[in-house]
Length: 183
Image 1 (cartoon, one colour):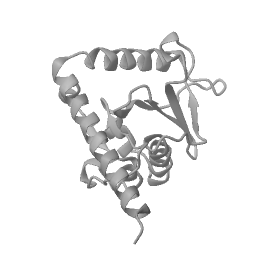
Image 2 (cartoon, one colour; image 1 turned 135 degrees about the horizontal axis):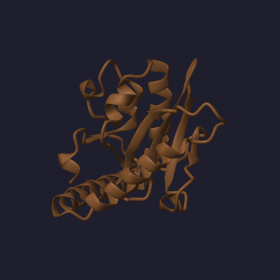
Image 3 (cartoon, one colour; image 1 turned 30 degrees about the vertical axis):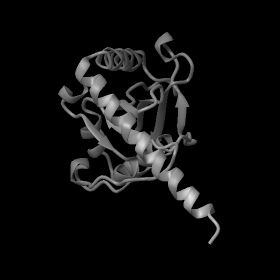
């Protein structure tokens, strides 16, 4: 179940943009956009991102924010290397540090949320390709996400997220209608 993950959090990426020493200290930001999706950080991704330098956190946060509002950041590329990633639904944000490269992997596969499934420091010294051991770990995490989504409690959480999205859309539509009414 999603709620039983060690770090199950719903966050907007704008929260990630303003990270202090811990992601959990940041208040939730409500954003009104019809393309907006919740951000769910799975496993140890929150702790890993929080441990990075502020500049890296900001760049990762911006890329995740772009995903949340239905866009793709220039630093986000479809992840290859496995049939599980077919269709460009699993993307990786490549962030260059002073000495190291970091990868943040997320999926846009689902209507209710952007799921961040992994974040790690690239260890391979050869080329720009993501090492196979990292591809294998991401594959396991994507499969685990798909399995978790079939659990009854998780289905209830997904229904809640979709209901929130529907409510947000209704508010947006009402604001548009009000704005377009003659005065």
